[in-house]
Length: 262
Figure 1: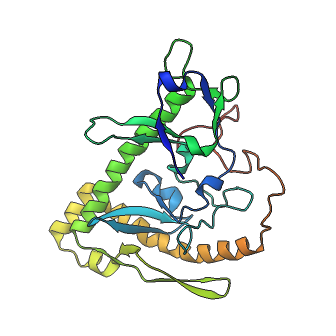
Figure 2: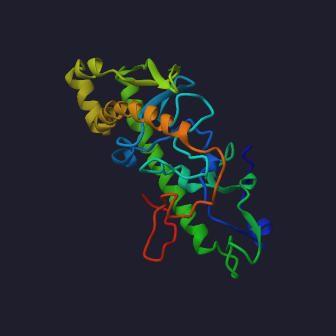
């Protein structure tokens, strides 16, 4: 269970953290928040859809037909898709805005097992009491995610206002069994094409049109979910070895260090 704790000099000055080496933490993430800035990489990888919450739609990437599952995480923790959604790459950190606060604070999931004693891993703070370089990178990455999330939501809101988001009846074949997926919505292409000039212009001005077509194109990846599901059924349930960073498909620079970027 996620246990987010605000990072502070008082609490974390003598603690360190480690970067994740497995995507096991995402093994139960059927739906992952998607950002407009990563659509080009998401569309060939997994289906995108909209989830309604409190009368508002949000954009998500779908990783499995069943709740509490993720077909793109192998039994040994490897990520099997060609792209890792940005929100997963921020693990075990998150930005949280307390109720009534004007700014978000950086938190870490203490249940992740990635906090260590001083002397191992990376420090939270430098000797001068300022955030260490790795923590600054994390914070900048999460701030960019929040900016992109707001931009994405503006586009989704425009599609909702235009009335082109409709329920998406999904059935998938998993191990010879037909599975229905409920609660996910899609762009209604017929309704989109029937919009009058004013609504069409509004979608273009907000940048929502590329998002609409990206969602439509991504629907072809339902077949990929079936293929990955079949492959998962053939994988051994045991973990024969600890996966390397290269196996996990992380982003590398010249020194093989994890970068918090797209």
